[in-house]
Image 1 (cartoon, rainbow, N blue to C red):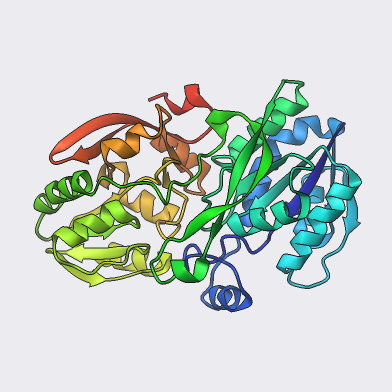
Image 2 (spheres, rainbow, N blue to C red):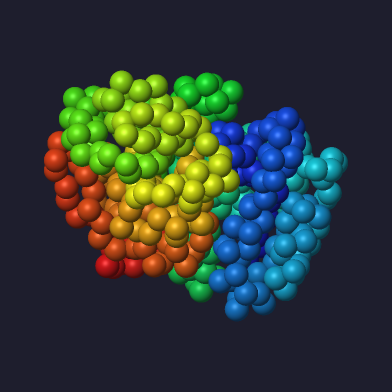
Length: 383
C-alpha cells in the first residue's frame, strides 16, 4: 500500500481569472467570489487522482476532513483516513500547517498537495525534509520547483510509484513570492526552502527564473520587429511578462507588466482585464484579433502560470493560428531542449494544440519549437 497524504487548498487559484495576481488573504478571496470567480483547485486535484483509480486497492489516502481533501477523494471511490479537521471554515493557512504536521506524524509515504507557492511554503514550514512531497499546480503563479507541470503529470508520477517503478528523490526549491508587490507589478521572488520531490524531470516544472539576467538588447530587438508588424484595425491581446511588455514599450505605451491588456492601432485601449472582460471585448470586436504571449522563463509554460485571464473559452474563440508566442533565443535555450508547455485548464485543448509552433525569437526571426502538454518528453514533442 502507498500511504498518500493529501492536502487541498480549496481557495488556490481563485484570483487568477480576475487578474488579482494571487489568492492569499480573506479580502482577495471575498472579492474574487463577489466577482463570480469559480474555485478550480478541486477540479485540478481530481484530474491528478483520476489515473490512480485502477490502483485504488494499493492506495490509502490520509488527510483532513471536508473540503481539504476528504470530500473529493471519497467521491472518486478512494479509501480515506481522516487525521483531523480544519479549525476554520473556510480553511485558513494555519489549517494547512496543521494538516501537514498531522500527516508527518502519521508517517505517510508521500504528501500530495494542490495549491500554489503559498501552500508550498506552509508545507515546507511544517515538514521540511521529513517526507517527500509533490505539488499539483492549482495556484495563480507557481514559481517553485516542487510542482508537476500539470495535474496529469502529477498523476503520471504517482502511477509510476504504484506500478513499482523506481523514482529518485531530489531537493527542489520553494520560492517566496511577495503577492502585494506583485499587485504593484513588481516581481519579488527569493529562495525560501527546499523539499524532497520524486524526480522525473520531464514531468516536473523548473523554477521560475525571475531573477535571471535579461538580455534587454535581444528583447528590445524582438519587440521592435513585433511592433513594426502590428496591423491596423487588428485588436491585439498583450499577455503578461517582460517580453510582451517590451512590445508596448517600443510603442511608447504604459502597459501593465503582469496584467492582460488590449492594443488597437498602436494605442492601449484597455489594461489589466479579467477573463470575463477580455472575452466580452474580444468577441465584440468586428475585425481580426490576435494574441501576443510569452513563455515563463525557466519553466516554459505558455498558458497556466500567471495568465489565467487567457481562458480556454477565449483561446478556442481565437484558434491556435491567431496566437503568437514571442520569446528570445536565450529564454528558449534556458529550457535545455524541453518543450514549451500548455496548461490551459482544458486538457482537451492542450491535447489539440500540442505540436511545433512558430516562435518569434528575434528581429524578424522565427523558429519552430515543440509545444506540449506536460506528459513526458516523447509525447510533448509529438507534432
